[in-house]
Amino acid sequence: MEETRKLKHVLRTWLLAAVITALAGVLALPHEATAQATYYEDVGTLPRGTPYRIRVPTKWNGTLINDLDFANGADADRYLYLLDRGYAVSGTARRSDRSTNYDPAHEIHDLVTVLDIFEAQFAKPSRTLQYGHSGGGHVTLGMAEIHPDRIDGAIAGCAHTPVWLMNSELDAWFALKALLAPDLPIVDLPADLSAITAAWRQVITAVQQTPVGRARIALATTLGQLPAWVSSTTPEPDPNDVYALQQSMYESLIAGAAQPAGQSRFIFEHSAPGQLSGNTEVDYKKFFQNGDEFYKRAVRRLYRDAGVDLEADLERINVFPRVTADVNAIKWWSAPGRTVSGESKVPVLRIHTNGDPSVPVSLVQGYDAEIRANRYTELYRTAFINRPGHCTFSVAEIAAAIETVMQRLDTGRWGSTDPIELNSLGNSLDPTSTSRYFDFKQIKYNRRWFPTVEDFLGQH
Image 1: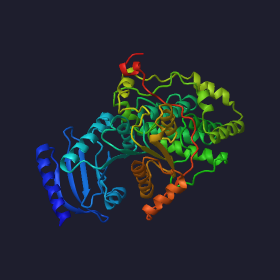
Image 2: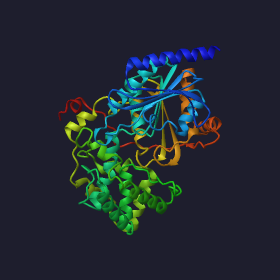
Image 3: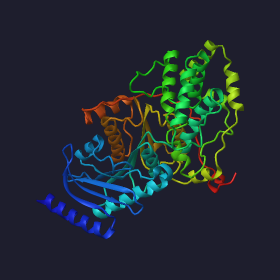
Image 4: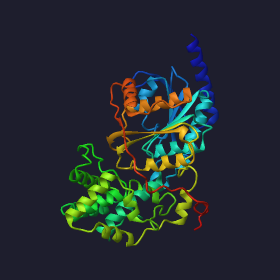
């Protein structure tokens, strides 16, 4: 009876708030999820035109998980799992005009608005976690840096940071352009990439048939700090097997040619608008030295096989005409929420697959380094999953990540993020999927970028 009385009170409060806020929310009767939980749902549109959705289980545990991508994917296994365990879930959807009007700072604003709606219609959660994948991972890092007043913890999965990501991809494709295809474009790309994709794939396929071409493909992958393995249809290569490693690099570049020089480059170039990536001051000989040790060993072996001078090719890349970032684009990307500062003010667990074709795992080390430099290490941990694909996390891995952050909030101390213990935790929480956390050796990231005052003001 007491639970029924409370639910009726919540429902009355919700209806009143929905009318007052006039946000076009649609109040639904209790639903049965595909799993087991019964929940109330509110679906609507924010004043800026962004869709939002809220689901609250009848047996709510008091914790809310907020996610950029919840509104259009609410029946995904991970959300149904969370509802079953008593978590409320809220969030938005990617906007329909995102391809030419992407703005992570506005996405953060929308996520905060959803939190306001939740509190008006229900109550202030005892805990609020920000969660997200890819662009959602990026805004999760942003929420932890600039809105610690609204969230208690965060889990950022395969987070992109646009300027970082585009610069890393630029390095790999710039090397390919300099050595293999000077006339093919890699920046300032059109919306329709089909012809450019076909041209790049033709070049890459042709050079893969020659020893020097194979060596140059390996060099470009190493310079861009891209993953050699991204395919779920082929096994991960033994890093000691030079030829298997190179074959995997080739396959990864062929896949990446669907969007040459970086996933979502068109979106990012049209956000500011302007060219956000550049390499005018890059020394590619130095970048090669920072490469993965297995990759560098493969490159040297392949260059010896081909009878070509590696140093001469690095010099060819260094003297090739450079790409200059647009000062106005850099100014735009300098705003809080559009980039990161490495100042997480709530506990953050950052997770990433090692075979991510869209957001190279190398980006993580750059953020780690800034966290250490800013002395926020007590609020930050990382964990890596041995799997190809972009944001291909299992429910067990997500459950382990959320539980690890919840334990940090409960105790004030991080529990173990050792892969064995994370896997044991994840498999116990969701025996229906598999947890594949593993020990991953990071390399020094080449492309950390934090805006200067001049960047922010738009002046050289």
